Length: 228
Image 1: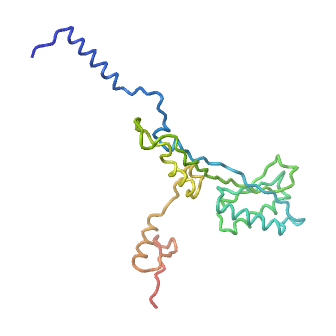
Image 2: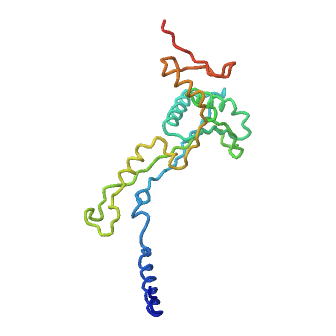
């Protein structure tokens, strides 16, 4: 095969390099929101502090009105709140310990775990004279939809339409059970695989899957339902 003349080879190389440069992506005006609907229609999460003060009675117990108020707060926490409920006593806390203990006990009666109801002291609140109960509530704010800025059937740029993905984000914000998951993901809880297998085997066999754990042998003792 004949080699091309030196000058012609330089010309071919220059044309090849120019072609590669033309193929490079150089559109600096492209924004992520043009192609990712999550960036164009983000779900905002607002955090609000729910807080109430309790003074109690002369004996250091909750009054009737405060009992009702506390029950309403715990019910709202169960529906919308983020862990934990904080019970903060002012000053040295000695004279408020009975009231704080009653608030904690009353909250735990709603089937809350002890890790969800924490008691603490705020030395800076020495002159407050009240026990403060508080928790956080996250609210998912959906984006507004329905604005058509461009013609959806005529687009030479091959980008998403102006409302593409908005309804998906709107529905997600409305359906999310815990908006706090949009702020930070929760860690996985521990799971006993051996216990899970025992329950499934009992269920498939038509037995009662409830069991006591552990037994002397180290296995789950299934409470098998009797036919009698």
